Amino acid sequence: MSLIAITRGVSAHIGLCELTHLERQPIDINRARMQHQNYESLLKRLGCTLHSLPPEEEYPDSVFVEDTALVLDEVAIILRPGAASRRGEAIAMETVLGRFRPLRRMQEPARVDGGDILQLGRVLYIGATSRSNDAAVAQVRDIVEPFGYEVRTVAVRDALHLKSAATAIADNCLLINPQMVQETVFHGAQVVAVHAAEPFAANALRVGGVIVYAQAFPRTAALLEARGLHLESLDVSELAKAEGALTCCSLLFEEGPAAHS
Ligand code: CIR
Image (cartoon, rainbow, N blue to C red; front, side, top):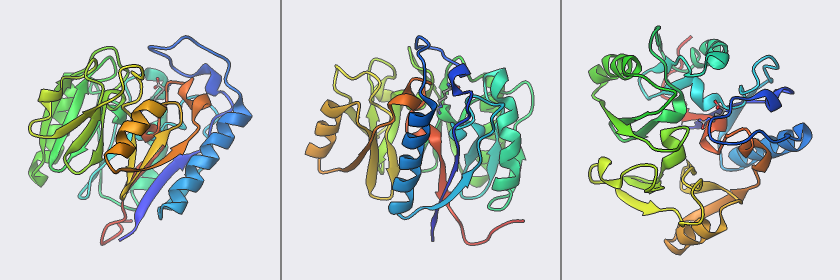
């Protein structure tokens, strides 16, 4: 089975992105595009089949494709992103994801970004943040429960998304910032805390047995390597100015036994 990675090029207007916890800084579009290309090249080198979509120039944040959909083995849910400026991004994903999964669509008034949905086996944790609401939790639950998934909500402090605060680094093991999310909410999962001097270091992208990780967090990287994890580090500093991290820039999933047209 092959791992599919869906990405989208960086909009020339990324400087007009949504920002919640960061001050606006100028973003060098050429550097941002170079960093994004390096990200795509690394995913290919790690064995992903890359579907690189062209930039959607009118959507400043559209490089952050993770927020547009939730892809499970059985179904893909086209989400309603929490920021009104981002809603249109999800529409373009329907055509692409429809090739791989049966589709369901989140309906108004529900809203949630994919960055708020963390899958650990058959459990989906949904962050309660400024981007999500109870209607989204209810709709996701209705769609996924018949497939045997459980949905749990998680309180998140001072972070844009749940996956700014916690991401999986191995089966049943999470990298977390304990200031942003309580480790006990992840029933039984092992947790590793980020280095205290690196509060934004909890977003890691697991690709097979490799952890794709931001160069900006060397102290947490050292903690992870000391645990025997294989890291591939990337400079994503320009994308970070748009409050994006590593998981945000792709939708990653197994191609699956049968494609759906
Ligand atoms: C936003 O605020 O929506 C974008 N500037 C950043 C989105 C990052 N996405 C993610 O973490 N999943």
